[in-house]
Length: 81
Image 1: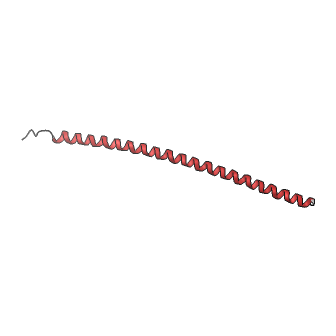
Image 2 (image 1 turned 135 degrees about the vertical axis):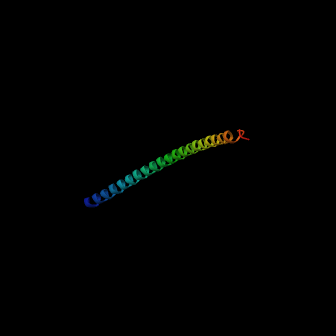
Image 3 (image 1 turned 180 degrees about the horizontal axis):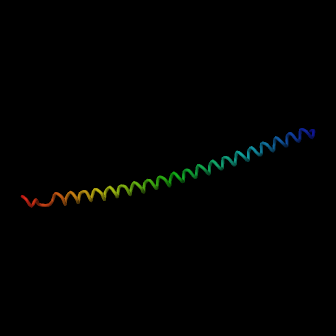
């Protein structure tokens, strides 16, 4: 085999190796990004669930206050009657 053929094969082999390394690097970065997004998605869902719980508690408290106000307004005896 001539020196030129060996050089061409070495260049091609090196190129294929570098493409493989690049593909592996891109795949590992993509996997890391997907895991990060999944983690963020879980955190957002948890935050949303906590927010919903707080809103429900606030609504329950408001309903209780409205009921108490209603009872205070309409349970008094009319002094005119």
